[in-house]
Length: 408
Image (cartoon, rainbow, N blue to C red; front, side):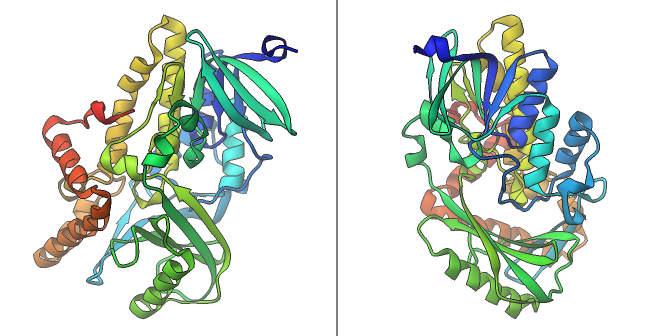
């Protein structure tokens, strides 16, 4: 039987069922577009994530999906803010704007949002490839080992760091970017002076590119991120020993390790990937990843922008890439600002008043914290990111934006 005879025709096909996919689907369905979302696993599916949502992400969920049921929350069910720790043993705690935000259980929160989007969901269906025909996109997938075919006017890749759609559009992209191992282990708590109302992050190059800890469901998470190729267990143990020595944190043997690969470089150096032709890329797949390892809010907002761009393209028949790239520039600014050392030092890129927290420090301590932030950036020197981060920071400071000519 031919492709045409087997094909399911839709207005939009979304690959993924996370926050970006749910937000994108909501915009499309609300506009009357027939929308299908593909998920390779059975739903609800596990998602390795801290689950701590930003105030902006919280507002988005409330405004677009309604009140959050308690079943989609971890314990503690909220986080008050973030505490930054520095090698000098200075610590700066900052409350989120507007008060505590939800601590989401991603397995259930993602599924809840996806169901409320109204899209048709095809789980246990794995995307395997696409062909952009100019007027539509043919998509191949498999379910139960059998081929499944779709024809969509537009395709949106929102599948996170798996980059399935990205690989289909740019086959060499995944091989040309640095990949990070981001892993966390869960520990019984013997004694933990770290305030369980906060997400704790270390600006300490000796611990790794990304080091954090916070309480969840009666356990303490200890997480570390570093360039792929190093040993996760050794890196993790180094952090555990550091926490005990420097912060008097005593933990039991680790349980339930979660390890994923991540591509959070684009948000640091403004190298986002937004797609080609009738295929859009959004969420973490596009490179969005906020400071403090919170990718949900920028996934929600970038996903919504992708959905709005598709709706506008349906309505006007204008080029969807031009529409999308024009719309997404504001989300690029919000996301990249959070990693931008000049914005951190002199602006207010986070949804917590870091500058106010710095002002509460003595002048010498304040200068020391800023020096330690800049020193931390040197960790990225082997990637040749340090100069890129600083140059993009300067461009943003003097032009008010990040250059779009760096986007794919």
